[in-house]
Length: 225
Image (cartoon, rainbow, N blue to C red; front, side, top):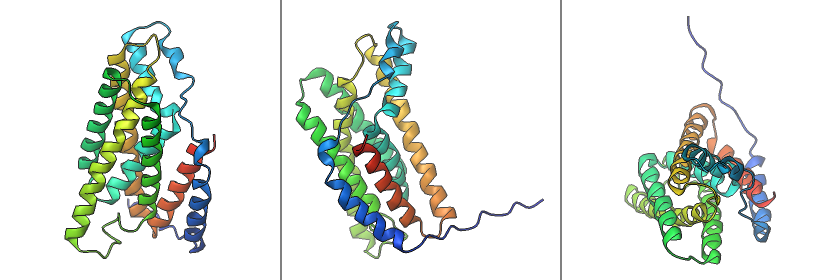
């Protein structure tokens, strides 16, 4: 028995212009960005380790800023053929930011500014042809340099997301359990982004258009809620 391959999905060229216009429009809405994560703290009402882990698992799912970062980074680094390096960089950034926020009284303006900047740069990268080796015409040396800088830069910006996670640990939660759940959830979402990028590259003829549209939809979800 043979299994038929899924047909390539063809999208109109106007989708590219629509995505670009939508992105410019949405940047004007940046002041509406908020980082509240309501609802998951009810899981820690009993204060047990398991409930703290569950709360940590739910935390990225209830915050669209963290959700977009994890999914978007999975897509971006997969398109760059740097999935494992990106995973290590983001994990280190999240852990460092979480630890620093627990140890020092970090400025909320710095944390929120870092999150906003990471989302803007992520969206811009997902909109660019340069961050896809199959599409870029640059030399391999310049590509490798820019990719390494992107990996380190997004890892550094992930510290602001880790710091935000630490500030939002529910009062009755065990910090270690919450941290474990948060890291597992972020890695899982990052892996979903990896799978999404692979699917688009395999089954969509012009996956960059879909990637751009997903970036706009993700930014819209973060800004308008």
